[in-house]
Image (cartoon, rainbow, N blue to C red; front, side, top):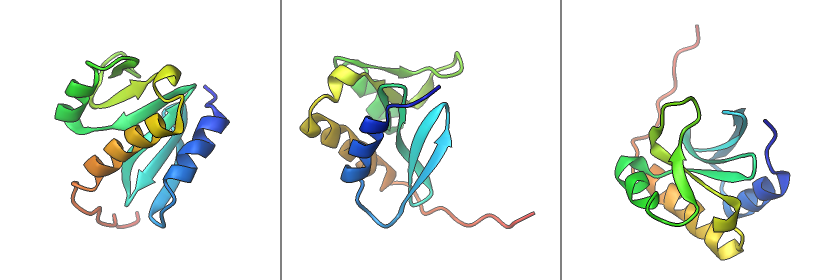
Length: 114
C-alpha cells in the first residue's frame, strides 16, 4: 500500500529532531524515535502510538479508530483519518501525543549482530 507523501512531509517537519529514523513498514512509512515506533503514515491515515490507556481514550474521539492492520487490533496504536489531521495544529497535536508517550519508554539497547 502506498502512503501519502504530503502527509509524510508534514510529519517530518514536525519531527525535526536528531533521533528520528524513517522505516518502511506496515504498508507505509513509520517514524522511529530513539529506536521506538512513534507514528507513521499508512495510506492517508496517521498511525499514532499512545500506549494502551492513551489509545483506549483516543478511539472515543472523532475520526479515530483502533489500528487493526492484521485482523487483530494493536492496543497501543490508533489510526487518525485524514479529516482529523487536516490542519497543521491537529497534526502537531497527534504527533505530540505520540512523542510524549514514546518518551516515557525505556531506552532501546543495541542488539548484538548475528
